[in-house]
Each structure stands twice: as C-alpha cells, then as structure tokens.
Image (cartoon, rainbow, N blue to C red; front, side):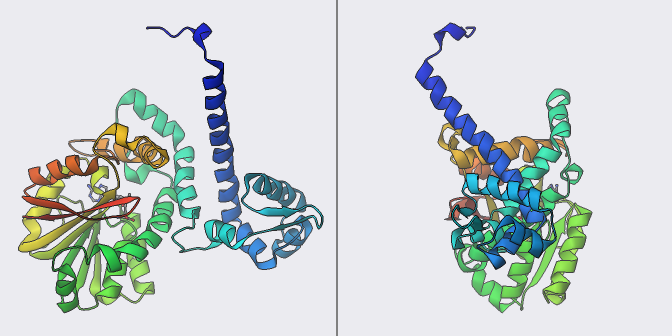
Amino acid sequence: MAIRLTDINESKLEQLQGKVMGDVAGSLGLLIAYIGDKLDLYSALAEISPATSQELADSTGMDERYLREWLSANAAAGYVNYDPTAGKFSLSPEQAVIFAAEGHPACMQGFFQAVMSAYVDEPKLTEVFRSGKGLPWSDHSPCLFCGTERFFRPMYAMNLVDAWIPSLEGVREKLQAGAKVADIGCGHGSSTILMAKAFPNSTFHGFDFHEPSIEHARERARAEGVASNTIFEVVTAKEYPGKNYDLVTMFDALHDMGDPVGAAKHIANTLSDSGTFMLVEPFAGDKLEENLHPLGQIYYSFSTMVCVPASKSQEVGLGLGAQAGQKRLTEVLNAGGFSQVRRAATTPTNLVLEAKL
Ligand SMILES: C[S@@+](CC[C@H](N)C(=O)[O-])C[C@H]1O[C@@H](n2cnc3c(N)ncnc32)[C@H](O)[C@@H]1O
C-alpha cells in the first residue's frame, strides 16, 4: 500500500522529528569529540580546567577562534561545562572519564574512532549494496582497527581474566598450570596479551589474517613484556597450525568470517579431546524484535557497514551478522562439531559461550 502524506499524525511526526534531531546532534557531537581526541584537547582542558578559550589556546598552541567554537559546541552538547560569569570551560570528573581517560572502560573515544571509520568508508559501503559484493576488513580505513582495539581492550581487561575464564569449567586451573592456547581473529592482540600476562606458564598463539594487525600485536607483546609466551601469525581461521590446544578463544570475530562453520570445524579439529572453545560475541537476543533498542541499533549498524561486508568478502560469505544471538551461534557451533554449547557469562554488551566436543 502506498503511503499517503495526508494521513500524517502531527504528534507522531513531532515525536519522530525530536528523536531524529537528537540523532543529528549526536552525530555531530561524535565528530566534535573525535577532533578533540585527535588534538588532545580534552586532556589539555582537564589539566588547566577551568579555562577560557584563550587559556586553552595558550596551553595547546592552537587557534583561539576555532577552540572557542569547539568549546561552545561541547558546552551545548553537555560534553564540557561552561561558567558564563567567568567565561570559563571545565570538565567534570565524569566528562573527563568519557572523553579523556584512555584505557578506562567508560572512555568512548575508541568507539567514536570506529564510528568515524564508517563515515570515511561510506562510498565503498554504499557501493556494496548495489554490487552485493563484500568489503574485506583490510579495506577499511585504519581508524577501524585502532578504534576496535581501543574500545574493546578495556572491556577485556575488566572481564576476561577475572570473569570470563573463571566461568569456563576447569580452564583457569589448566592455564595456571601451563596450557596451549590459540586466540583466533586476534586483531591487535589485546585479548592474547591480557591472557599471556595473567598466565605466564601458558603459551598463547594469536592468529589473524590481517597482516598489519599481527605486526601491531607483535610490537605490543614486546612492549608489554610477554614476547616469550606469545606467538603471532598471519593465517586464516580455517588454516592456522597446531594441534591439541587446551583452549581456543575467539573475540568478536566469528560473525566477521565468511565461513564460520568451516572455522568452527577447524577449531574442533585442533582442540584436545578435553579442550574448550570460548566464543565471545556481541550480546543479542535470538529474534530481531528483542534487539530493537539503542545497543541493537549500534550493533546492526556496525554489522551493516563492517561485519556483513567482511563476511561476504570471504569464501562462503554466510553473513552471520553481529546480532546472531545464542541460538544461531549454537547452530553454527553444532554444525562445526561441538556437541556441548552453553552460555558461560554475559555482560550488557557480550555473550560468552563455552563449546566442547
Ligand atoms: C572485530 S575484529 C576483532 C579483533 C580482536 N579479536 C578484538 O577483539 O579486538 C575481527 C577480526 O577478525 C579477523 N578475521 C576476520 N575473518 C578472519 C578469517 N577468516 N581468518 C582470520 N581472521 C579473520 C579480522 O582481521 C579482525 O582482526
């Protein structure tokens, strides 16, 4: 049935307009915050807060007129506070955490960076709708890789060693004693390095097919003093070497793969008989209608622009999507040869599944 514009309900229209205006403001706020991050303006303001735009210009060496407008946009967004009597801008502790506390789980700058990559890559993303082709992970702008690491790492730091590993049956004890672990689709190696630090008796193999990410992971491992019990290699999830792993992990990567069933089969073949596969995926309900909320919007949007194109660029091209949910993920794991799958842990953003042969 064609839509008749004469049927408009004015109050519903106003409500939707208000929502969309908020989204427009948010999309510009994100860009304003991203620029501030690139130029280290929030950290600079945090140091001299409260400050006039001239004082911020003096301390950063940047142009006062641009800074005044940038600070005004931030004040209008509620990202910084403004004192009209003194004409000074300041950051509250909460604002400082969100915009300037690198490594804090509540710092959003990595998230903003990942969103920015989608804006930068928009022409390529629009084109794949027409062609039906995929867009490889490696063809995105580099701020996607940095943003992913920056945003995910603090969450892994908070949950991985203290909550997720203990939620798996007998795994922590094996890691303490000395185990062989593979981390598939490890990206910049945040998860691999965190585990290697916590369990020095174990050996951690980080595998990813994106060469620049693996190079970065190697550098990080050296810098963080875990080069002796980490090995990073450029290889696909269906071809990585080794047998008899006690634990295989995969963080936010299965849904990016073209052939997640093929990857699960290879993982099953490389695990020891009593081994565990820990799969970490974005949290989602099993049905679309369960995911219709702001977090679902964020995940489906990233999935449209990054995850489904990444999957479609690889063989099979299943396009699992970032909101697959436990039921669909379990089907994939069962098809890969895992007979026992259970939910081991959750956070508001992650689903942790334990799979055994
Ligand atoms: C969203 S990132 C997650 C990276 C990392 N696990 C983390 O949590 O920070 C997905 C990763 O999966 C990797 N990936 C996708 N398909 C792959 C495949 N078929 N084989 C190996 N790695 C793959 C990408 O290169 C990328 O590093």
